[in-house]
Length: 471
Image 1 (cartoon, rainbow, N blue to C red):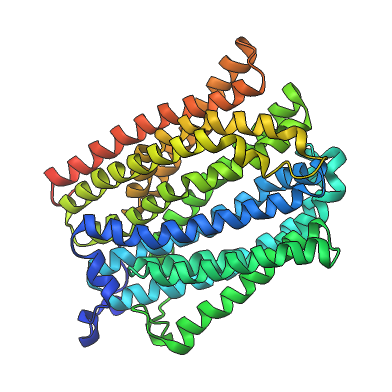
Image 2 (cartoon, rainbow, N blue to C red):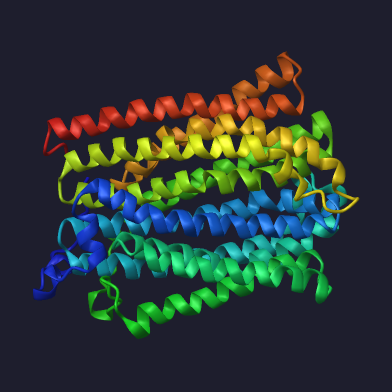
């Protein structure tokens, strides 16, 4: 459905045709837009994930219990990451659709709504997580690692507002095709974090809390940079003018209609990680959780380029939908999958070949040396996981771009909560493959989920192409 709001908010002005380079890009050739937006996003997302990997490497020096503690906090952390990315996706989708409709004041209003929504959610979540952190971690099975998990989680979740704000701000910039500044901000954050980790963990003697403080401090610095761009330099296409802010439930719904389902997708991923952790403890002990926690960070780095391409599709699909250029949606969906498959093939080969060497990064102390062979085996299985990600990622991103967040959520639920669990039962319970069965279940579930998402998206896009006014 096209975004609607009060006529006052949508009145055009003489400045509404003034487009930045980024806006001109996303309203032009969809192939060029996907490539141009994906490049900076790939760099920024790899760096974002790289600092998580570096964080895990430094924590690994504190021993297996500390690394496992990070693994138990990860599901909760992923909820925040999901909300951050979800708010960014909601902002990008809503603002991009307004840009496609050539309604600048509407885009401004959506951006301001995003900021207010982000602040409100941050306050509620910070209080909840700090109050109930310990019982949640105990319920998740942290057990003997609780003394490590509690301080790490308290510092991490104390910075909730910083994490959510940066994600929302990145989405606003992406909506207007400004992926370069998003990259600059993430580069600053990542480099700061990687420098601060060893200083705070070992030199300052803060232990596992130092790893969390490194993240919070770097996000605080980047938040200041983003606020400077928006409110001092004021050279973005979207303007935060109080006169353009008109509280409107329809605008809020257009943002939350993508943000909440997109965030719920990460919640489902968090639930999946929690289930995998629990299953691994049962079949192989806490050491298997440490392997999964370390190995999954490497997997996330390898898959970030694919996810980055998908993120660019949200903007391109949103603008195309707002402008009713449905053929551009078709081209963007097809082309992004091709690009994603090329990237997936390259990362699969590299990961398979270098898995033993990558695993050694986590085995630089006697306490963690025993994990290396199993981490290498995990990474080599996950190579097959990469190859079937592009169809699912690009299809879900297309649905998010047009405002159909619930469809994307349903597809994610089928993959993470149905298909993977079904294959886990077959491989672990029926076939007795142990922790290897858990890994292969993730691969098989992803394959089936990708196929279903691709077919669904193609049918939807083709229906739009056949009917220029589907709503």
